[in-house]
Amino acid sequence: MPTPAFVADTIQKNSAGLVSDWLAELKALAGGADHRISEGELKDQGTEFIDLLAAAASTGSDITAEPWRPVREFLERTSRSRALQGFSSSETATFVFSLKRPLFERIRQGTKDPASVAESTWAVTEMLDKLGLHTVAFFQKSREEVIARQQEDLLELSTPVVKLWDGVVALPMIGTLDSARTQVVMESLLQRIVETGSEIAIIDITGVPTVDTLVAQHLLKTVTAIRLMGADCIISGIRPQIAQTIVHLGIDLEGITTKATLADALALAFKRSGLTVTRAKTA
Amino acid sequence: MDRIPILRMGDYLLVTIQVDMHDQLAMTLQDDLTTAVQRTGAKGVLIDISALEMVDSFIGRMVADISSMGKILGAETILVGMQPAVAITLVELGLSLPGVATALNVERGMVLLRRKIEADGTDVSDR
Image 1 (cartoon, helix red, strand yellow):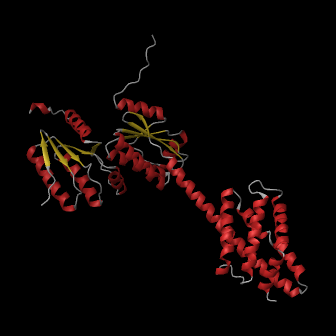
Image 2 (cartoon, one colour):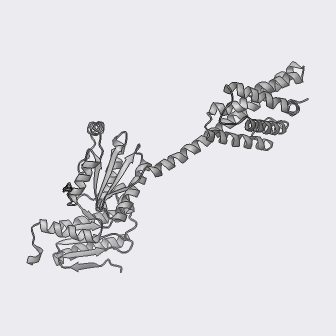
Image 3 (cartoon, helix red, strand yellow):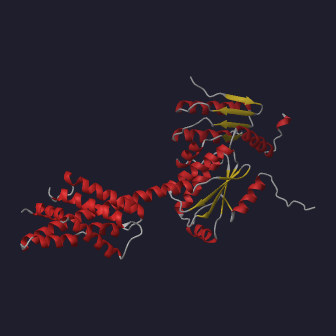
């Protein structure tokens, strides 16, 4: 009997036993039951995979071929849901690789010919390795999608422009400043300046962990754009370490008003708008 | 030929750019404005670019040049109402317009212009 047909036959005949052995193997490897996925669910997935595998294995060992498509799609679906459930990549790969031991056993029981056993074992190893790699590759892709989506969410969340006073807007900046973020930040700040007709904008960089030459350049660009529109810009929240870094790097912040805290910047903004803050007299 | 009107209001000249600028229009404006400042002896020039939605490197430089020319001719020049997109483009092009005064809108620009001229020590009402 040719090898692919023999393998497919072995899987088909022993499907029930394979699934239960496989699940036992998975459980042993995971060190007990997993709360992220129920046993019933895992059993359904195992049964479905064995059925698909049996159907596909008889056609050949090239897993990129058309008959293997249901198997691939099943694995893609599974690895995506595993990625979303927070499984690690090795845990996801183990789902496929742990099928080896039960399957090898069934092959050994199925034939007495040593050459055939060796050949089939090799065929199964090759097949399962490819499937495992496909699963991991797709797992990675799903994780990257999740990360990209989170990055976008973060970008939108982290650029609120707040109105502090009539004619004074502030932008508390949090996180690392890169080119893409600076662009979004700059646009939303300039837009708010136009909408509110504010003459003073305060950029607070308390939440910016490091300031290097690139970040400083981004800040300078933003300040210049604000000035071009006819408003003034104050940068506040410069921590002692950042002040040291700026001077050590030789970054030229001439012509930019900088203050240590947001309170100082607001006080300056009041002064420039001709406002004074006084304590109300208690009668 | 298209021309951007230059309106005279007392001692000020008011230029409002209401159409998208093209190269020839910008060159004509440069000629017209410098001539007008010289002829009228205006003390201040207000250039309103709030309707200007797009700039390329040439128009950006022309806007910067026209603003600086007014100043050289002895008239305080204020650029008002620049759109955010235009401001970002100019900065990216490296045109930060040093020495050019800016304001958010025409009203604030006028206030700033009066204040600047008064600070110069020239009493406008004397003339």
